Every structure is written in C-alpha cells, then in structure tokens.
Image (cartoon, rainbow over all chains, first blue to last red; front, side, top):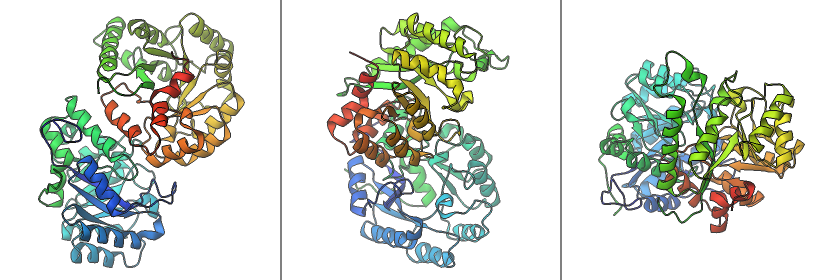
Length: 264
Length: 270
C-alpha cells in the first residue's frame, strides 16, 4: 500500500474524478483567484495523480467561458485530463452545448450544479432531455449534492430509478450534510458516490465500482482528500482491491477509458 | 505519522458511553460501562501513541443527546475516568444539561471544575436542541467566565448554532474563549468571517470544514492564534487532517499555531 507521495513500494493508478480549472463553487465567492490548467497539472504531479476529470468552475454567469477553458485544458493535456461539460438546463442552447462538447469534442461526462444554477432535481423538465442524451452518448452525469432543496440523496435515487441507463455520480457524497446518502445509493445500481468533502463511504456497503475518489480541487487540498483514502487503506477499512477501485480503477470503467500513467 | 514534526493538540474529540441509545432493548451493549471505558481508554492510548498527538479535548456525546440524565453528571463522569487512565493527555470537556434549573447547572459546573478538573465546556446545540445564544445557556457561560474555561460548540447548518449565534454569545461573554467547531462546515461558511470580525474572543476549530481558501483568509485576517486544529475523532484520518493544514498557503509558524500552539494557549498547556 503506497505511493511515491505517501510512501512504500506500490504505486496505484489514481484518477481524480472531480477537479476544476478557473474556480469552484466553494471558492468563487471567497476569492477572485482563478486557477489555471498548469496549476492543476502541477498539483496532480505533486500528489501523484495520473489523470483527472475536469470541468470549468466559477460564478454562474461564466459557464460558457468555463467550458471553453476546460476544452483548452483537455486539448493541452489529452493524456491527463478528461473533460466534463458544465450545463445549465435553463440555457436555450444547452443541448447544443451538450452535443458540441460530448459528441464533437470528446468530453466524457456532464456536470450539473443545481444549487448554483438554480434548478431542482426532478423539478426541472429539461434535465430529462439531458439525461436522454447522456444515455445516448453513454456518459456519466456528475451532480453537486448535499444542498436541499435542490439536490439531496433521495432525489438522486429517484432520478436514477427513472433513468436506469444513465450513471449518476453524486459529487461530495452528500457534503457531510445528508444522512440518507447510503440508504439512497443502496436503492439503485446506477448511482456512484464521489468522495470529496463528504468522505469515503465504504464500497463494501454498496458493491463494486460504486465509490470514486475526487477532490473538488481547488476547494480542498487534493493531497488531504487523497490521504483520506490511503488512511482508510492503511487502517484496514479498505482492502487493497477496494482502495485501488476507489482511487481510480472504478472511474476508468465508468468513463470507458484505459488507465494512463504519466507519474513516475 | 509517528514522531510527527508538529506539536499537535486535537481540540475536538468524543467518546460515547452511557447514552439512552444503548439503553434500548434493541441495542443493549454487550459490555458494561466499566468495560466500555477500559476499551475506550485503550483505543485512545493507541491513537495518541500511533499519531504522536500531545493532547485531546474530549467530551462525551451521551450527555448531549440524553434529554433526561440518569446520573448526576449524565455521563460526563466517563470522561473523568478516561482522563485518569490517559495520564494528562485528555483535556476534559464538560457537557452541561442546559434544560436543568439554572442554579443546578451552576452547581454541577462548579463541581465539574473544582472536583473533577474539567478544563472546558462542550455544547452541541443541534442535537441538544437549544439556540446557542438563548438565556438558558447563560448560567453555563457565567461559570465559564468565572474560571476562564473555553467553550467549544458544534456549528453548521442547524438553526441552533449558526456562526452568527456564536458572535452574539461571544460578545455577551468577552472573557470566554468561544470556539466554533467545524467553522460552519460547507453550508454556513459565508457567516464565518463576518462572525469572527464581531468578537475577538471567537475562535475556529477546523474539523468538518474543507475549504482551504476560507481558512487561509481567516488566518490572514484574524491570525492563526484564533484557529484550533480538531478531528471530531479520534480516528484514522489524522494524517489527512494534518495534511490539510500543511497544505495551507500560510507560514510554518502559523501552521504550528493551528496544529497545537493556539490550543495550548487557550487551555494553558505546558
């Protein structure tokens, strides 16, 4: 059990399922600072992270600019970064953006932020159209969680039941605010929990490939969020196989990609 | 993590022994209280040794969640027992029952300090169901002010313990160091800096909050002396929690303060 950063002999493949360039929902109102793709790559290198899913982040009116930034980032580091397009269902051309980034530019996922973009899961009719296309393109949909009334665990499970062909990723695993995360996730097979801020729910309680490591960098310390997985591994709460899955292998299956190691 | 380069004080730890939860027929504990305390003592002893942590401020959860106490101090006694077994590493935090008559609350807190050696107070307005600045809490702060005891309270999105209620009670009791546990987590974090601006005796405790930029801004504006490291444990994520502090964009001296020296000052540690 180890990693060049955390010590030892073994060097597991690590894919951070949740990062941003620009800013994040939890930083953008606290600072004017914006993080570049070079900042992200530097942080990934420091922490031994091989690959990362990236979406633009920042203030809600900046969405289109964020997506362009994410596209430039992925073009610059195609072996390291996987694009997720941030969509606001209230935008008239939201489906055009979806097609452009997923079909034409090779992005591998969709990112939704009900709290910041002011829509409610199950109450916003355009989401149905987005999910239909997510199913068509076979891409996962990552959604911010833990902020009622917009996006809480029960809504995720209801939605996952309604769209069984779509893989939903609950970013933040409820943000340490939602006591129904595990129970809701158990109701369905197509709901994956992402660990940033909310912590690592034991994959043993859900089944294989249902929990994935993410940091929500630059909100958090990428290293600290990663260390939590290694701490659980070291203390025996995660087996070696479970830790490897959480750290990256499960996410490669969800994305349908081959793991690429660029960190020595 | 052994032989850490840091002097670490964990300002937020818990045991849970003696609760009514355990008293239910469905979840009756297999161990009696004495066995439970021995088991907890062993768990704490191993944890302190493994992670090289100097002190932990420990409270029992049971007196927070039990609406009617079954002993005079409602389970705080178990913290005293833990402290006896840990040789000075445990800083005992008393959990008062604010719903008892005010003279009883005062009397019990006096006992807690003078007889049992409690070093601070822990409140959990969310699970105990009272607003942090309600007059029923005044007797607690009266005694805390008399003995200069720090008061650590849970904060987060519950209406009972928003950061602004911390500022209100801290302004009323300027002699008392009031510690905002979890610093609003990820929901009331925009209240944290404005609340800190209002009361100089308001401090932050880091567990449960993950927003690096917020903590960096707090250190820059108020100084690392007003930030205390905590885990809400003890648990095996200590290295990750320390890594979070190490990764802050603040000076090494400020990291030292956060990880231990700020708490040492508040708790008068050697």
